Image (cartoon, rainbow, N blue to C red; front, side, top):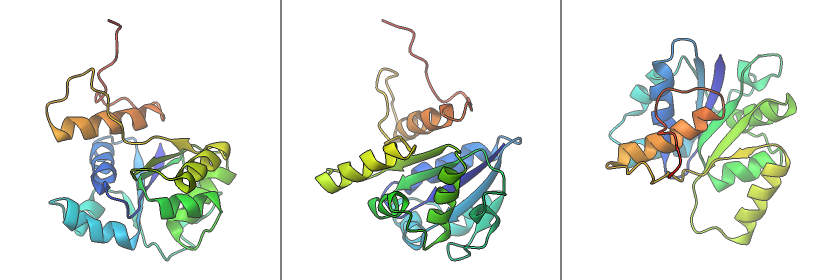
Amino acid sequence: MRLVIGISGASGVIYGIRLLEILQAEKTIETHLVLTSTAKMNIPIETNWQLKEVEKLADVVHNINHVSASIASGSFKTDGMIVAPCSMKTLSAIVHSYADNLLVRATDVTLKENRKLVVMPREAPLHTGHCRLLYEASQMGVLIMPPMPAFYNKPQTIDELIDSSIGRVLDLFAIDVGLVKRWKGS
């Protein structure tokens, strides 16, 4: 399996980092990473990670400006793409097919090739323009997965909250790494 992971500049870069961390342990999954400049800025602001450490989690790291990279072409086979977190700026570019960087070009390729595209939008509160973008993205086939953890599993740490959301994203690709406590009824 091959997945493209995009990390954009919204708050919540830990979601993309944790996703890469989990996928690195899955030897059958090849990851291709592309980060926006704001994501690179947010990594040391929001986490204890350094950019080089995050990049080492991916099998392949692509430069945001390299729009002729492998992931910019539909002939490069992937099983889909996850943008975690997804800023409203990136979501707007996706919805409007404004592929002026590799992250957005890769999402465009994912959609045009009818592959699974999951975005984890990070903004609150949402105004009408944000809601319109989310609606239009869903009309295009984008799966919207806001990082909204479940609480029936009684999480005790921030890491458990993050893992809950990441586990559900991976469920969308039929990847079960044991992060999700399955609801069995009351």
